[in-house]
Image (cartoon, rainbow, N blue to C red; front, side, top):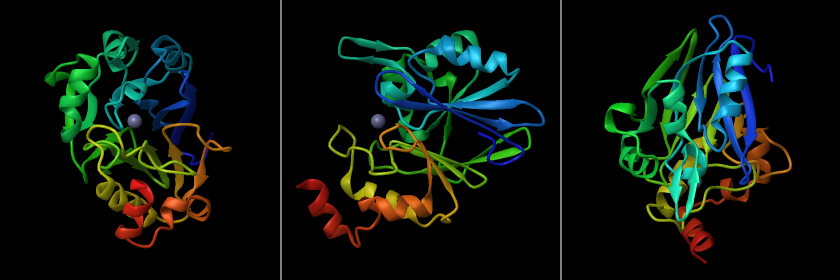
Length: 227
Ligand SMILES: [Zn+2]
């Protein structure tokens, strides 16, 4: 994808749960960050090496193992820990997500750059804004780069993330979806899973087809999500 000239933007579907990993960065300097590296770290680092990208950071939308690796039940998913063994970069996570991230992946405090809403990260000439969007997990976050939004499991093209998991919060999710709905219609939505018939859509298109973005108030939202 070459959506915006100075921006490196690659959407990579990976793993058995239709996850998307993203590579974002600066065309001029070839510096990049990787969002939600999981499942097959070797194939991801091969892509970085083939393109001569210089990895400067890993960004975590949230701590679930299908996005950042780690153990759940009997399963072990590759993720940030395996990436850091090869490329020692920091993992940028919302401060409320750091404990979950450590527990699931086994990385330590010094491996994590704790961020909060409004923080930014420079990658070459590109600036990434961190948006705290709790609901799916307490420290879920989205990343905004120019007219692009990487939304993790907060917002999908046809839905939103689950709110029936430990740490989920129905009301928080309402406010987070509203916050994203307020972004300009030409914002390109890049979700955390390939759950729709298209891999990405503009916010304007998403608002038209996503019923969760059209629920008028919190009471209706509670009734719909808790039924
Ligand atoms: Zn999740």
